[in-house]
Amino acid sequence: MAIQRMGEQEGPWYKHVNPYQWKVLLVSFLGWIFDGYEGYVISLAMAPILTSLIPHANVETIGYYGGILMSVMLLGWATGGIVGGVLADYIGRRKTMILTILVYALSTFVTGLATSFLQICIFRFITGLGIGGEWSTGTSMIAETWPEKARSKGQGIMQSGYGFGQFLGAFIWLIISMSFGANGWRFLFFVGVIPALMTLYLRRGIKESERWERANEKRNKLKENYQGLSAEEKIETSFSLKYIFSVPKYRKRTLLAFGLSLSTTLGYWGSSSFIPTYMGSLAKNAGLPNPASYSGTSGMYYSAGAILGYLIFGLIVDKFGRRWSIALYYFFSLLIIPTVFLWVHDITILMPLVLVNGFFTLGQFSWNPVYIPELYPTQVRSTAASFIFNASRYVSAIGPFVAGTIVARAGGFGYAASIVALFYFVGLICLPFLPETKGQPLPE
Image (cartoon, rainbow, N blue to C red; front, side):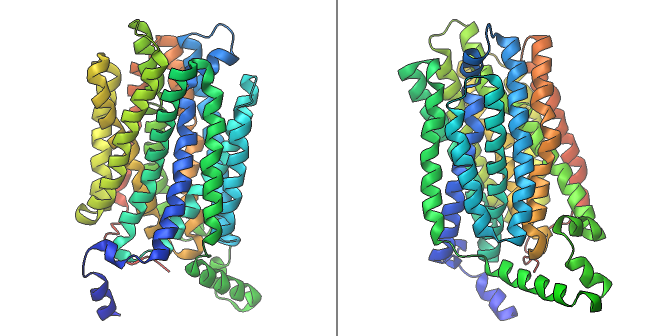
């Protein structure tokens, strides 16, 4: 075993990845591209959507109802994530992947047909169900198939798919807004079905995770002889959500990692997710032509920064460790958000700062697929990953609502975004109490 581990460390990381492992990454990456697209198009076209569905909409009402709409989607995301994670630990990673894609492909299409605020809230909630369930399966598949030396890089690449999806959404919105004006927002959702169907087609060739099959077989055998099991073995057969809270070591990790996830999600959804709307409002107030195009352009800058942030995180965690890398991203997120929303108002200067914002505030999401799978055994890995990554959205759902309420009362985004960003301190407090997993083998 020692000789094998030494051999695994020789040569560049990508030399240890075989064609099938690259394929697993590809389909997970494509799925997360679509998730990024879906999660961002609402932010990009928020003002035109609400203007067409709510009579006499203005900055205050758009901020208020926009916060509600994003909060509803986050609630769906959280619910779908937890349910999807549990399903993946019981029916398998592959089946859950396919099911979640079908859910959000259908809901995306019907979103483009919405004729009222209530309808679009319902369709976004269902879309969130699919997005939430998809992430944990892709994360678990990569963690369980990729070699140890390459694992963090693979997870960083997969997470960067979200940034690519956002960039794609921003680019498509820029074309649509310039071609059809603000009223072309429905095309964003009709076009979004195409990559989902492509991903569904490719995922047919993915096999079930062998690690999951072994863990599932072990769990089923233990259940057959339940009466003769020890107390520890009985816990292993318990419901996966119960398991991660029954074992003291995993309960502590779950609660602390939940604090990290809460900081990341609340910091983003309560502040930086408003950047396209904020930039569009600045352009409108400045009397610039086609303000919607500035939303799309800023979205592209933000997404480009996020892509770099995702990829670089996957590289630095093996050098500096998981905890120091996460802390670095939190610290600079605390600095860049008030810079963008409070201290700088020139659009020309703001565009590159938006890119920096994306690098840290969205790029930091890479810690979830890199770090969480290393904290739990295979039998509950997907459940734990989905609970930590998605359950925080139940609390984070208040972020857009709170920010939108502050916008409505204060008449602007600056103070709202900066206040919500203070939640990054929660993550900095939790980090020292979690274990460092750099160089550790994936738990069985």
